[in-house]
Length: 462
Image (cartoon, rainbow, N blue to C red):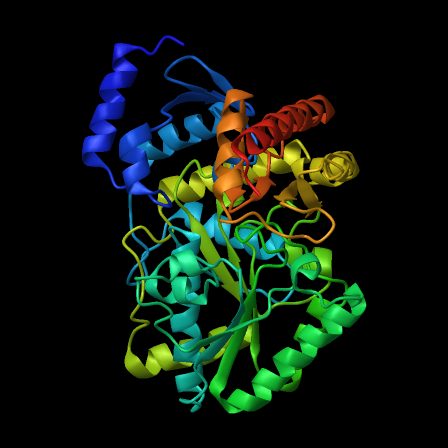
C-alpha cells in the first residue's frame, strides 16, 4: 500500500514527540501510529486513504457520528459570541444553565443538582471530594471509604484511578491512593462457581458486599460506585437481581450509591440511562462521552438535593466550595452538548439503540459459535466477544492479550476498529447505525475472527 510522504513525516513526528495513553511506548516507536485524517458518519479514514468502520464510536462516545455539521456550526457561533467564560464566584452563562436544566429533566427523578467537569475521570474525582466534604459537614469524618468492583473503570486521575479496578491502571502509579475496597467482578462467565446459576451468583456477590460493609464498618463507608454495565473492563452485563441487592444494602447502611454512566448513559443500552435498564436508583450519577459525542471535552455529575443542602450549608460556613476547574461548564462545550442532545432526540437515537438491540446482540451470539469465542455478551448497542484457547473449559490464552493484539491487526486490515481489552473484543458503534451498518460490522468482525484463527493456528498459540 502506498504511504504518502505526509504520513511518513507525521508518523515520525508523532513517534519523536508524543507519549500516548494506553499504549506500549516501545511498540509504538517500532510500529508507529495509525493517523486518522477525517471522519463521516460511522466511518473514519487514515492518511493512506483507507476507510474503517469505527466500531467503538471513538472511545465509546460518538453517538451522532463523525462530522455532524450542526455541532460544528453551534461551536462556531458560540465561539463568536462567548468563546470562554468561567463559572467560579457566582458567574454563569446561558449554555451551561440550559444544559444543567436539560440534564435534570432527562435523568431519573431525585438527581436535582449538576456540577460540570471536563472528563469522566474529573467527575468521579469530584465525587470522591464531594462525598468526603458532605460527610465532614454531617459530622461523620470517618465515613470516607469507597467500594468499587474488580474490572470496573472509573477514570485515571489519582482518586478515580483508585476506584478503577484494573491492574494496568494501578501498577507503578502507586494506586489505589484513597481508601477503597474492590469487590468481585459481577461477571458470571468468568467468576461464577462451577454449577452456580446466575441468580445464585448475584446472591453471593450481594452477600459478599454486605460482609465487607460489616467488616469495614458502615460508619466508615461513604459510597458504592459502579457502572450499570461494566464497559472498559470487558463489556460485562450484571446478573439479574444484582443491582437491586446492592441498592438495598446501601439504603440499609446509609451508604451513597453512585452510578457511573459515562459509557452507559444517553441511550447506549437502549434506555436513557443504565440504572433504568437494571432497575436501581442512584444518589449520584456521572455522565460524559455521549453527552457531547466527544466533540468537546465535557462531563458532569448529578446528585440529590439532600446532598446539595448539606454541601450548601457547609459552603456558607466556610464561605466557599473550594473546588472547580477552569473550564467547568465551558460555554462552547455546553452549547455543543445541548445541540448534540437535541439531535439525539430529533432522530430518536436512544430508541434506535433499543430497536436494533436484538439484531446486534443476536449477531454477536452467532459469532459466539466461532471456535475462538468463549462468550458473546452485551446489551443495547454495546457488546464483546471473549477469545479463549479452549471453548469447553474457558481456558484463556497465555499470555492474555497476545491474540487480542493479533485480532486488532486483522480488524484494521478488514476495515473495522474495535477495542481489544486483553482478549475481549469490544464493539460500541455510533448510535446512528442502521441494520445494514450492523450487518457490515458483524461481517467484518467475522472476517477478523477467521483471519485471527488462521494466525493463531499458524503460530501455534495455545
